[in-house]
Length: 69
Image (tube, rainbow, N blue to C red):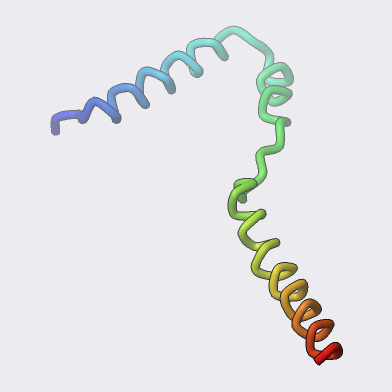
């Protein structure tokens, strides 16, 4: 099977990462994995916040203007 250029780059990146691990104790390798990466991007968090809190804000504005008319 022929590799695509994207797959070839991914394989080279993986090989470099694995090569950097060679000869190091396992405790040093695991400390690199300790970095937490959020499974949801800030863009999706902002969108979710807008949907939830934006609806609330629009509803409050509607209630305020309804009280004056």
